[in-house]
Amino acid sequence: MFTDHVTRVSIALLFAGVSTLLLLWYFGGYPLLMGITALRTESPNKDLTSTPFITIIVPTYNEETVVAQRVTNISELSYPEHSYEVLFVDSNSKDRTVPRLKEHITEGKHPEMRVLTESERRGKASAINTAIEAATGEIVLVSDANTWFDDEVLQMIGAHFNDPAVGGVAGRLKRSDGNIPTTAEFTASNQVYHDLEHIKSMGESRLDSVTQFVGEISAWRKSIATANPSSLAEDLDLSIQIRKEGYEIRYEPEAVVYEPDPDVASEQVEVNKRRLIGVLQAIVRHWRFLGTPTDYYRALIFPSRKTLQLLSPILFICLGGALTILLSVRAYQAFSWYLGLTTIGALGLASALQTIKSRVISTESSPSVSMATGVSLVKYLILMEYVILLSWAEFLLGRYSVRWDKSNSDRDMVNNEMSDREHNN
Image 1: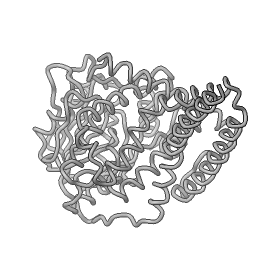
Image 2: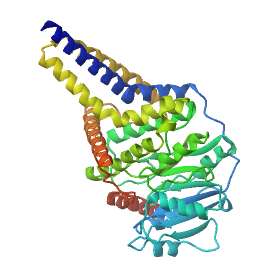
Image 3: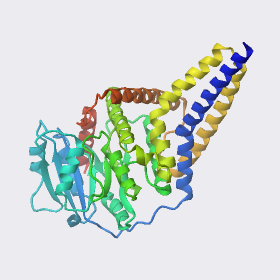
Image 4: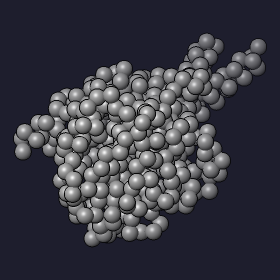
């Protein structure tokens, strides 16, 4: 009986320890390492005098409320107007998206803008490929209709392509900014999440390559890769293709695009579920490449940022089961030691990460740490773990579609923001 008790305690502690270490690494250790990497390495050289010709691709579907403002935003970028073109690709919208576009596009004026149409809705990847076939530029940049570029986006993106080793460049997605009026305040939990994503991307880019593109602003050499029509995360799939070809994928934090988070919980679930199913698709499709850890991208970056993300709810379940076993066999001393060591480790990581975060994002506002912020983060974490489990279920059951929809709150918010900005100007 004593031997059985010791065995059960040992196995429970093993599962609890492994699960805890992996979770601490995913949520704290890896962001901390990337933050240290970003601070201790120099940013790559970029030629700001270089102005390569760039084709901007904007897929649309039922975007009549925002396309006029999007045309204005793209046409006023601080980049030579003869050095870029814009292709809007409409996937058989049911509203007045196409007529609205044509009303606001002036023929013969630079930058040149064209509207391409698809006879049926086949998804964002299909729209991207349709535009690539018609693109004049060797460099293509994909964005969304309900986003807003900073003026120097093209300058910052194009500067990297003077280096032949660079195959793609990811910009920085921001969810709020003092220069753009917003109709709703973003929660501290969302801000913390996006700050950590920024830090991780900074470190990854300096170490090897950023994990993946940002779907709202991603640029690459069109001869390297095309979008996979069956993928729900075409940005991730494209980035893996580019890395497979041996090219770097850089992160440019000064190429900023703005887009609001969905402000309805159900919409957040759907948006994140789609992205996560796309990650599962990409891992299955490229498992041979990703499973050969011969560089930092495959040995450290992708597993830490993507694989552990998908495994995190399973690790939480294993941890919960292990702790339940410890309590059921009355191994209170072992449970107390585990709880104490884990608490010390978590607090130490959180403190170190906060220090690194304040240095990496030293010139930007960041939410202060408070009890309310902590509660908000816990709620956000629980929601995301639930979404990951839903993603696994729908992926395994095949319940997903490549056709995409922006949330209604996204469209409404960005329309109000753009209208307010135009009015203020």
